[in-house]
Image (cartoon, rainbow, N blue to C red):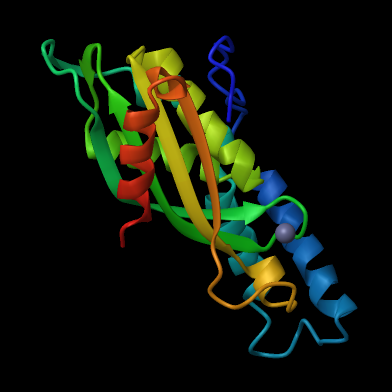
Amino acid sequence: MTDTSRTSSGVPAEPGHDEAKLEFTELDWRRFIASLGENPDRSGLRETPMRVAKAWKHWASGYGQDPAEILKVFEDGAERYNELIVVRGIPVYSHCEHHLAPFFGTATIGYVPEGRIVGLSKLTRLVDCFARRLQVQERLTSQVAETLMHELQPKAVGVIIRCRHLCMESRGIRTPGEETITSAMLGELQTNLGMRAELLALAREK
Ligand code: ZN
């Protein structure tokens, strides 16, 4: 649970990865493959360092994005709307900062607008912007909530994220398929327990 008094919109954008950096990581991945005892020159692996470097450029592309910019254009039209707007099933694909292993699942975002509303595509992009960084699920959850609170200034924001973590599942610490659930409730959702229960129930439904 996060504190409403914080107005930060999360981690600031960082400059994108340039080609020189990509080439460097390509060499690094070649070294990594060799360190596994593999021959990086065998045909199946020859292109792998470049492919991995390119894949990571995508998986880390959130560092080059400004979350405030994503939410800049919003629509008016909810002046008299005083109920929760809930969007479920927003895809989450991220990597844990402890093992660089994927964690993935879905996000549920609920908010009570103060005049301004945002489209589904923007919520998806906002989640991507923070998910395409090295993350822990708890921080991802609060960054999405705090950015929405800061940029949209709604009466309430709640974010619930459910993910499977391959670093835990694949190493047998957890039961396969088990989900980690995190939530951040801001504004009226901190005090309105009925609204909070409604949102949590909606997020639980498959
Ligand atoms: Zn991990």
